[in-house]
Length: 626
Image (cartoon, rainbow, N blue to C red; front, side):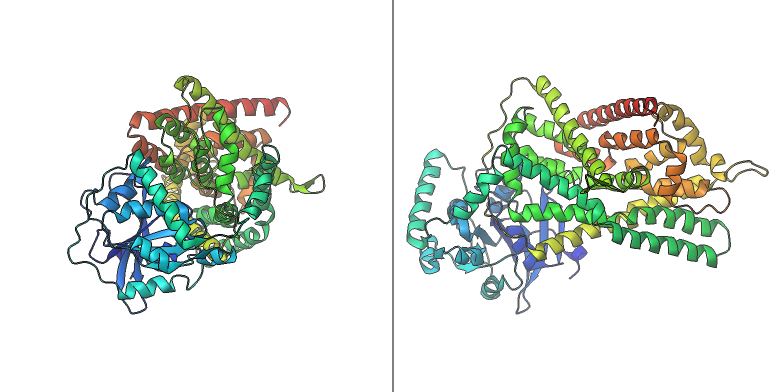
């Protein structure tokens, strides 16, 4: 069944995966559904809704819903509220799932049992999945499954969500399971303090009966945490990790980038040699190949960046980084809860802003939303890489560090420093508001799963290629058309693009952007960049290809290195630390906050910061002879 054909409504054959964060629930979902899944949003809220189709060994088809992670049905955040409402049947138009697969980390069974007991009281059909059961056995943890089944009154199976065949026991159970014809769950009421305490006592009783743990189980993790969470050495390790990440973005990507660049150039030359000169050849060579190919070349760098992010997440390091930064972020009115959304914004501000739903305090969440776009998203990477490669020499510093990687690292640090500064200013506006205390689980350290990394990178590559083949291609073709027509009059001097709609628009925009060193070509490229930042690179490729005199086929990087001053390049790099914001980010801010005014405030304040910072950079660089 194709991904697009997966229906969204609940049906008699639907099951839901319920579990606490870091239980491996989503990895198990990916293992069960494979490519037969899709990601959308729950109606009315911007909380991820992942649905897929599971085909059991006997051929039975089941719909699977991956619920947001939660520790309890007593919801404290938007995503936990969605989980509660779906399980209890309180979401409009959706009945309770006909089977709940309660996924718990077998190495930390205590974390998941509280919600299992809360949900069991509703009388819903349930099965307990002891995920990461292989890790529990390696750690010497013995779980008496028969005793656990007897105490919980539900089947208990073992799973390993990151391993091929790790869901075999669950699949055998599902093959023999049949949905209840008329499901009538008991109503659920929020648990008060007395009920919570009783549940905790019951959890401890069950653990004493069914679980045996060896002494010193956490000794290895505690030893690592003494370094990772150290107030000094932990910060040094975090900075070194980020530094290595950005060094790798340049050092590791060079060979595949050269290969892609060579292929794109070869295709352009082949098309030019085999087609007669005319509008169609110009569209293919100057528009599509020069524009789209100019963005496609940066895929290796984007995948390397995501490789590090996914590996850090899978290893259990990211929650510790959030914990480590909690005190530092508290100085600007935030907490460690803001770290994960801000880190997600390095990939894209849209999921980063959506991830702020885990922050329970509204003002802290709003500040995190407003500074999330200052994190350098992957869409800026093609722009940074183009300018750095063109103006910063590829040489080593101190015999070890790549200078281009150092500049890239400095740009990311600049975005982080700007976000901290804006948060500090907003703290004054907020007054004395105490940030939400950070209480979070620190998962066990583990080697990142090669399968999870491969799936994550493949998905990121698909997203990038869809953007290249979708919005970037469409805007490139539109820009080519506007750059080609109307044609230059007979006897016109200079490139024909100067007489086109784009040329006329550029002459107007150049008045606005000339004080910060931007040429009319840059000003024009910034306009479609509002849809997607990567389009700036393709737009520059198209505009300069059409601006070429005679048979100039110089690569874009070499061309701008010849025609721009260093001051202009530095000004544009600084501009992209702040702006422009893509329209999807602004739309997400409006949906998350319910306010068009706040989205407008974000756009205006970031544009003002970008212009002021670029103006200062340009003038200082000129004064220094740049």
